Length: 131
Image (tube, rainbow, N blue to C red; front, side):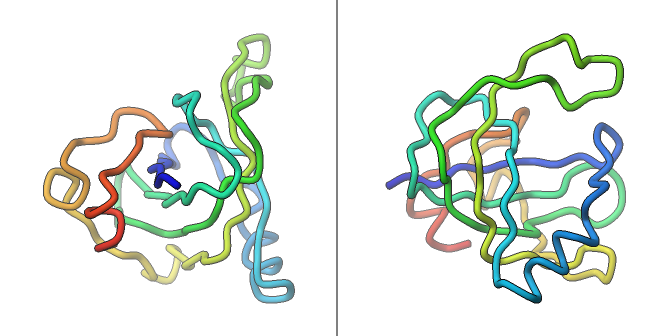
């Protein structure tokens, strides 16, 4: 099994169902959502970490497992609905409320070995285990 780094930049996409995600976590212990992923290699059972990027506090805010192989769907961006993008379905089993400062700070080059430019980069297993 592999570990993939997913990224989220609030300046590019508003997490409109964030309150529902927190409710789902509190009530059922998980939250399911599709997430963009550039890699074609994830398989069900692979691990994912979700990093908040951009302004303000940044770092790991969630972890979970891949539920589906990569698939194509409409782009999430405003006025980009006609563009297709690749996603995976993810079952998040840990979700920290970044709005309350609950975030695991990371140093990209130290903790990942690279600066992520897209969602879905595979992590070195030793580095992933440390996170």
